[in-house]
Amino acid sequence: MSTIKSKIESLLFISAKPMAASQLADLIKADKKEIIKNADELLADYKNNQAGVQIIKDGLKYQMVRAPENAKIIQEFIKDETTGELSRPSLEALTIIAYRGPVSKIDLDRIRGVNCALILRNLLLRGLIEGKPDKKKNEIYYTATFDFIRFIGLNDIKELPDYEKLHQDDSIDKMLKQNEPRN
Image (cartoon, rainbow, N blue to C red; front, side, top):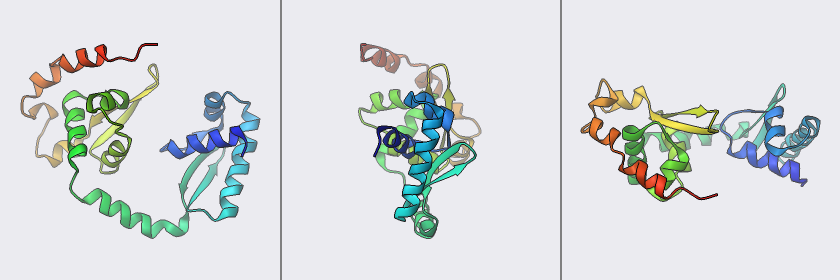
């Protein structure tokens, strides 16, 4: 597989939403026509291999999705995953987001000391958090949703126990600043 095709595949795999050919070109540092050619080839490869995931195209946007014939099993899995109890790590991440939000994935990872990608995905699927992009910092910042606030029986996030004290506490900010990676 060409390097460009491999990079497109990786980006589509991690993206939760469609990616424009121009966005892929910017990220991969390649010509847009080359991106379209490789993305179209990748789309055909997946279709011909009858894989469990497919690549779809809408205009000049591409997205990796589950294969249509697997819809039922995926719906059952998501139902199970989004209706069961939250794990302790999920509760920890949700607590940090509720009290410290908006918080970036990088900061959440550093606070918890582990990669939180799957936890964030699960919380997003459940509708308990939402991500908002910060284009200047090129990061997504997560906050608790209205559904989360309603689910725990509050009218406002500020009604969480000790919210003002913990939201304003700068000890986490100091720790993050100290442990910031040096370039």
